[in-house]
Amino acid sequence: MNLLKSDVRKRNMRKFPQAAALARKPRYKTGFYANLAPQCFMKVFWLVIILFAAPGAGSGHAVADQPHEIEVALTVDDLPGMGALPAGQTRLGIARDMIRILRTMHIPAYGFANGVQLETDPAQASVLKEWANAGFPIGNHTFSHLFLDQVQESTYAADIARMDRVLSSMDLTGDSLGIRRVFRYPYLSEGNTIAKRNAVRKYLFDNGYRIAEVTVDYHDWAWNDAYTRCLARGDRAGLDQVTKRAADSALWHLKQSVQLSRELFGRDIRHILLLHMGAFEAAEMGANISRYQAAGVRFIALSRAMADPIYAVNPDYAYPGKDMTFLHQIAAARKLAMQPRLRRRSSGYAADGQPMRR
Image (tube, rainbow, N blue to C red; front, side, top):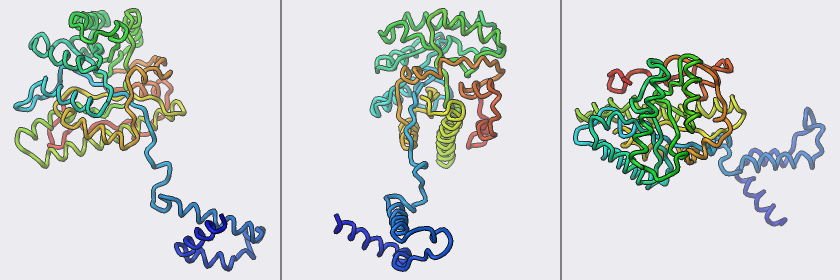
């Protein structure tokens, strides 16, 4: 043991020559060190040496900066597909690409479907079937992708019921009714009045639905049309810019959601990430998942995420408009003064300068 200590000390003497000189001639005659006995001084000295000699010490990365595991459930809205369709691609091909990546990377996912596309193109039902056959559940996203601000609650409830009949008739998952009946609000719009909000929630709960809230949303849909335009004109630089900006946005919104959840609940919650079934999302899904994992994300099933007690909270907050996450609802209901960075949204323009539409 003494030999080991000696070897360590010799190594650190060579590595920290100035500190070694100080150790040989300790200066503790005045100030703080005047109250330290020589033996105590040497213990402090070697503690400092050990700390700085530790792996990663002095590299500029504090322990707090290292990846911290954050549980996130991945959800995909707007099955069988949304956004512009690049030339030569099909909705089924995009879905297959997404399914292949999710299965290869062993990522659980939950889809939310609309039925209106099936009226104009019944063949798109194959997207829902392949998604379900791959082992991924499908929930209700209304039949017509309605914006709740613009319709009566009775119309909205009827549209939910219509989509449920579509899912029931297709027998997509073979799972129990309770597993299928998970609902996602289109546009994350839960009602612009308390009365409307409460009426829709009552309908959902009376019919056995659970609400799949969203805590991480980087507006992935906004990049899809720009991606398709860049592909069409062979704009490699534009594609690179779209990809970079979307990647930056994905990580930025994850960081802010983690920060806000800690401010609201004093802990790390199980997050729910919102993505959409589009061409750009499929093209970037593998890289996107890898980036999240490198940032400390561990992907979990939606059922595990929804078991977090925070999702039993009703913010009881009515708001007009779109894209307000569950965390922002709670923060607004509590009148939390969020810093401007927590309200950041997409700029409204894609990398190629064209407006982004929803």
